[in-house]
Amino acid sequence: MDYFRLPSFMKKISIEHCLTELRIPPEFVALHAAQLPFDCRLVMPSGQSWQVRLLNIASGCHFHTGWSEFRLANNIIHDDVLTFTMVDAGIFHVKRYNPRTGCPRLSDLQEEDEYGGSDHSDAPDVNTSDDYVPSDTEGGDSSEEDDYAPDPGVLDDGCPTFTVTMDRSNISRSLEIPMAFWRRHIRMNSLQYPVYFNVNGDSWFIVLDHSDTNIWVKRGWRRFKEANNIVVGTRCHFKLIDRNEVQFYVWFDRE
Image 1: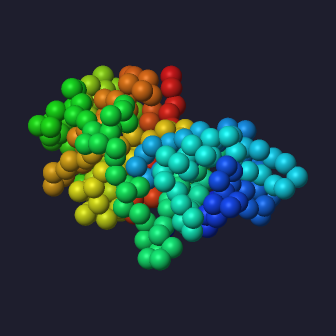
Image 2 (image 1 turned 180 degrees about the vertical axis):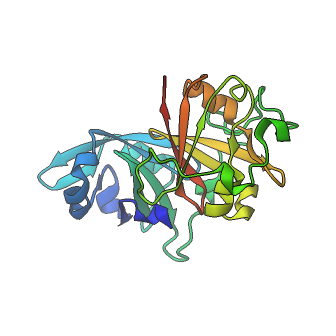
């Protein structure tokens, strides 16, 4: 439920008014203008993202340059209902709903092909074996509650966060998510579905695996690690911003 506390707005698409730009509600702009940079990014549930440029004129604040490309690429049509949730300054997660059913369009949740065709796909990683299973000596029993405590250095905004520091023993293996964190904040049956890691508007499609005591990234970790220059000493913070369609906003502290 914490995801729904983030700033958001809803728009019903009218091709007459939304063909080349989309006006942001003035009430939203009045409250959050300081977090609306010149260049923004729109991220769909599939993990794909588009850069759009803001135009601030007498009639209001609009998504302008890049909006048409976003609309056409996602086949957004008349009467579609879109929600825009701002997860960071200028970064919006966009969800589309069928106005007749009130349900998300399933096509928005699918990758372009089996492995996405990009660095953000779930293609198998060379350094993340499908046979990898954490041993008790590597990670211990992460189901123990003592193995997870909220990060005291992170702003308490209602979104739970866990932190992992990369060292020489874990940098070459896969990322593990504390079992206690997952049990406390996310439904266990969500483990069978992909999750998303979001960094400054870019999203990575992540496939998990698990045992009775551990959860780890099965596919996607190597690409995520290399793209974000994660090395020994990097402290990675994972903030859960949507516990239903499991999404983490990720940022880094570097030595």
